[in-house]
Length: 172
Image (tube, rainbow, N blue to C red; front, side, top):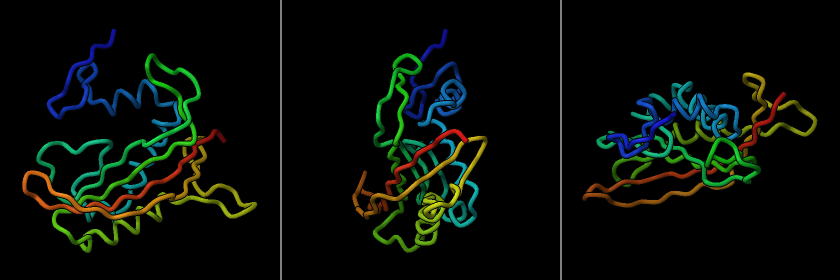
């Protein structure tokens, strides 16, 4: 039996492990979690991105995270069928990748923003093979939205560059 309780970061801790570890282990075969793991590994594997930010994380940054940082999350997907309990199997997933900086200028992370686009835009040319195959999964991805916004929280001004990618994963 798996028990759920709220972690200090505000997320849900399952059996004492972080939600990300448990979800990837238990539901790692669903497209949503394969793509989430793929996005994180692509971004963490690139020096231009990791040199520019303090954190790359799914959904929410821990309290006190220093700027700049990257968050990514599932925005939508086509609900196909019941998976594990309340978790559904989704396809045709739309993921959002946000780069947050302190202040109003994105110049400290411009290179990272361009690299995120390069790393997550995988559209094979007509007749070509898909450009990313990992562990028996083919990934295709195209950016559908890019925009900049600003805001303030607790008196701290921040800017956010948003990119949304339609990502598909399929078996080889």
